[in-house]
Length: 69
Image (cartoon, rainbow, N blue to C red):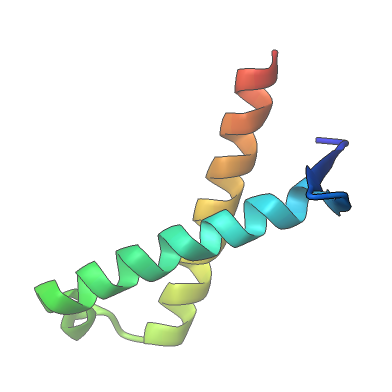
C-alpha cells in the first residue's frame, strides 16, 4: 500500500497509521485475554504477544488493500 495520510497538515505514511491502529487493537485484545486467564496456557507470553501484533498488523494491511480494490 502506497500513500500518505493527512493529519492536520502533517503527512504520515499509511503504514504508520495501520501500525498505530493495530497497536490499539492489540492492547484491547491482550487486556481481554489477561482477564480471561488465557496467558496461563501460553508458554512464552512475549513471543505470543509479538506474533499477535504481527498478525493484527498483517490482517489490517490485507483488509485495507482488499477494500481499496
